[in-house]
Structure formats: structure tokens, C-alpha cells
Length: 255
Ligand SMILES: *[C@@H]1O[C@H](CO)[C@@H](O)[C@H](O)[C@H]1NC(C)=O
Ligand SMILES: *[C@@H]1O[C@H](CO)[C@@H](O)[C@H](O)[C@H]1NC(C)=O
Ligand SMILES: *[C@@H]1O[C@H](CO)[C@@H](O)[C@H](O)[C@H]1NC(C)=O
Ligand SMILES: *[C@@H]1O[C@H](CO)[C@@H](O)[C@H](O)[C@H]1NC(C)=O
Ligand SMILES: *[C@@H]1O[C@H](CO)[C@@H](O)[C@H](O)[C@H]1NC(C)=O
Image 1 (cartoon, rainbow, N blue to C red):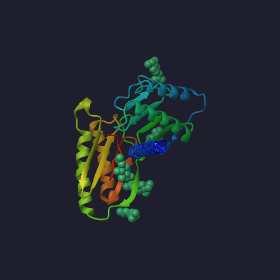
Image 2 (cartoon, rainbow, N blue to C red; image 1 turned 90 degrees about the horizontal axis):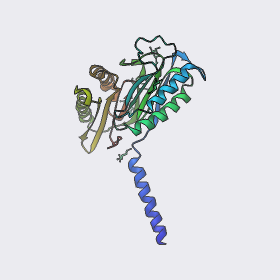
Image 3 (cartoon, rainbow, N blue to C red; image 1 turned 120 degrees about the vertical axis):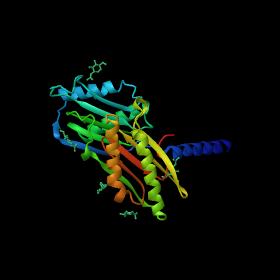
Image 4 (cartoon, helix red, strand yellow; image 1 turned 90 degrees about the vertical axis):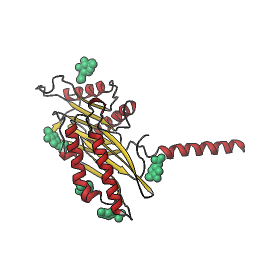
């Protein structure tokens, strides 16, 4: 009897733990295989280089959740036909070991979904991984944007909702692009009360962008989506290779 009760209590504790951590997920979100960069075959030099770069990245600290890496040191001027570039950017609450774990997930996801593509990007909740045979460092790739939306709309006080969101976005845009050099990881989070609800939001840029590039990237999202697309939606994310934004009426980040 008492052991049954104990078991029940244990079950409930477990349930509570599962429920309270369920919003911090690392779901697969999207991928893009680049068909203009061609393919590599099994055992090719390109594949060996790719694996080596990934192995090297797995030895980094990833303290700021970011790396842009290549198998060639002077890659700006390299003519190596099998050169590989890898961008990894982890979400601002997922640095260090969590970033490593996302890299692992993302790399196997990428190999599965874009088998043999020399150029490809994959998104998970906690990181974006790009492999490429051309240098993409610092470039905003406008063909890589996509959005995912919470289909529900707020039903009342739409104007207040939009205004509060606009203010929060403005604050986060400044936060993500404030130029305090090395201590700025181009990541900003915030929340705002809207009536009985609370809106949670984040913005982030990949750290290969300059502060100005980050501003341009996030501003492009806000300008393009805010006026008509975000509208009354309870939550939306817009992601790309180089920057991302998300808001929800519930917390979705690690505290
Ligand atoms: C998780 O998300 C749900 C909405 O899907 C929200 O009601 C709940 O408060 C969130 N819980 C935590 C711990 O973030
Ligand atoms: C594919 O790669 C080329 C570079 O070879 C780049 O210009 C283009 O933007 C990429 N397209 C997509 C959809 O990733
Ligand atoms: C990997 O790291 C080793 C040692 O740090 C270095 O010698 C090698 O050039 C790197 N290789 C690649 C492909 O980045
Ligand atoms: C958001 O995504 C949907 C579905 O992929 C697409 O139809 C829509 O045009 C996108 N919105 C914007 C503003 O790009
Ligand atoms: C929410 O509003 C958008 C237009 O802003 C509409 O397209 C969509 O169908 C609405 N969603 C629901 C669940 O009513």
C-alpha cells in the first residue's frame, strides 16, 4: 500500500518535471539542400574534409555557441577545390555542452536529409548548422528565411497586443545590436505583460555578422513580417541562416 503511494508520488514528481521542461525542446524545424553547389560522394576528399572540420569543432568550447570553420586556414584566398565551410550557431540559452549536443543532432540530421549535398542548412530549436563549399561568412542569405507560426490569434485588444509587441521588438533589436564588442553575443531576450498574458521573445544573430549586419538582418524580419504577417498571432518564429526572432505567450527558453 504505502509503496504504491510512494510510487504514485514518484510518478507525479516525474510528470511535473517533464511538464515543466517540455517547452525547452530541440525539435527539428527545417532544412534547405543547396542544389547549385553540387554533391560529394562517399569517401571523397570533400567528405573527409567535412568530417574533419566537424571533428575539430567538437573539440572547441563553444562558449558563445558559435563557430565559423574551414579545413583551410587562409580560406579567403584558397583555391582548394574541396574546401569546406561550416557555420554553427547555437541559441543563446544553449551554449557549451548543449551546443555540442545540438551540433551532433544537426550534423546527423543534415547528412540524412541532404545526403551528399555540398551546400546545406538545417535548423533545430537550439542551433543552426550550415555546410558549404563557398565562403558565406558575414553574408545575409535572403533566400534562407522561413517562418513558423502559432495559428491561434489573440481575440481581444489586438491594438494593445501589437503595440506591446512592437515595443518589445524594438527593445530586443537594440539589445541584440548594442556594440559593446566582445561581451555582446548578439542575443537578446525579453518579456512584457499584455493584460493577463505575458509575451516572451528572443532575437539572435549568427556571430559572423557585424553589428550592422545583425541590425540589417533583424530589421528585415521585423519590417517584412511585422506589418501584416505577425498581426494578431499568438506566436511566430522567423529563422534564417543569419538571424532569428521568436515570440510566444509562454516561456520557451532555459532560465
Ligand atoms: C509551457 O508552454 C505552455 C503553453 O504551450 C504554457 O502554458 C506553460 O506555462 C509553459 N510552461 C513553462 C514551464 O514554460
Ligand atoms: C546556394 O549556394 C549558392 C552559392 O553557390 C548561393 O549563392 C545560394 O544563395 C545558395 N542557395 C540556397 C537556397 O541555399
Ligand atoms: C583540425 O585541428 C587540427 C589540430 O588542432 C589541425 O591541425 C587541423 O588542421 C584541423 N583540421 C581541419 C580540417 O580543420
Ligand atoms: C510565412 O510562411 C508561409 C508558409 O511557408 C508563407 O506562405 C508566407 O509567405 C511566409 N510569410 C512571409 C512574410 O514570408
Ligand atoms: C489568424 O489571423 C490570420 C490573419 O491575420 C488568419 O489568416 C488566420 O487564419 C487566423 N487564425 C485562426 C486560427 O483563426
